[in-house]
Length: 218
Length: 285
Image 1: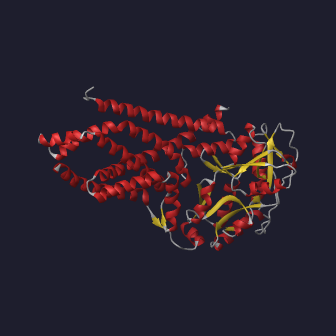
Image 2: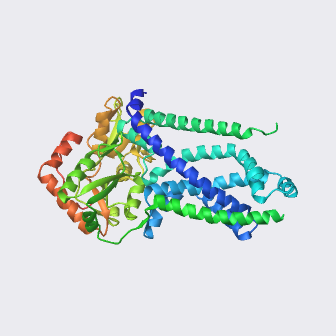
Image 3: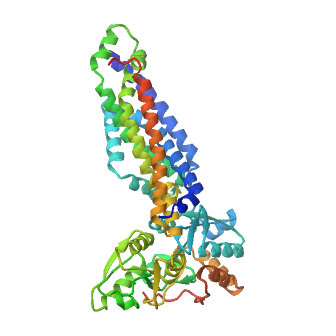
């Protein structure tokens, strides 16, 4: 074990960690937006919308992310649609994560007792208020732990985007391993960066949970 | 329950807004363009840039040194592009993505060293050779039981899956008195790591790759000489219909060989010079 291999590559690993973080966060954010829509579609009483939501989740949760990335980057090019590497990477992460996030949100809404909305109607609350002040805050609180879980999973899954030529953390660790012929040091270095990022993410999750728990009866 | 019906109207609005937002973000990352069916060489000249791809994990040919692309291929493609009067940009892809990426027109030329084989010549257009690719073996420096290639009989040898060197190893091993167990890895570096760890007894790869690895970690690795394989060569590859591009690259490589640049590059990375065929040789494997 030669720790100087890690130290010498520190700048390069930091830069790659930046790529991992930005690609993952873009994927998470866009994935949340799409996921929220898919969730709303899935909860809809309109049959075609509900079917669309279910179909989306089946496809994007059922096909491995690696295959989705390869499909977007290489297969679409066969039809003359040249998707740039960054778009394929972020798009792949977002579309796949959206399926999981939609299910997390759907589960959270379903966990709310139906009677609450009915009682609110009886008390004369406006529909927008029922959503904004009663259903949404509670659903958000319920979904924080599984969402943080999903964010961490996605961040680690982002190592797959190297197949479209994005030099993220795992890829750069492999580059260092091949250049130095010291794989152990290179992967320990990369692993420490992942751990640091994910501990930070988990910390934010705990913070958000505490903030949202304010006013909740124990 | 009427409230839920009304809510679903707002939902529909939300779907509309969301779709617009998704389309917007796609455009932002997009610059999604439609590839034009044009002569690749003409297109390269027009944009003044040759887009080349390789896997930067193949020392001494392709190395990513703290994010800076280095190696034999880098020096050579720079010299070749100078002859062609264009700039070069480099893409780092895992080897399994390189040839599919070439087919999908994600770049113009694959500058990963590709061994010339009969099978591959049917699918891709090869340039003139850029280096020796003859298959050889590397062992642990302290292993006295392997002194010549034939000594691997009854032992375990590792190599990168899908490479011609592993295929050559299998052919070679079939003629030995005792069977050889061949372990195939995603890339050579895992095979080297297992060799260092004692899980396998030798690694197979091309002579220049192994010689470089052995020189970089001479405390751990040593060469098993002479190389056991048929003489084979590395070339770069283009799409089969890009004949004009291959001709232009070939002319540039031959000029780089004639003016001594090739010899300088070889001295720097292999520690010695080697003569290469001036035309694409008939594949022996």
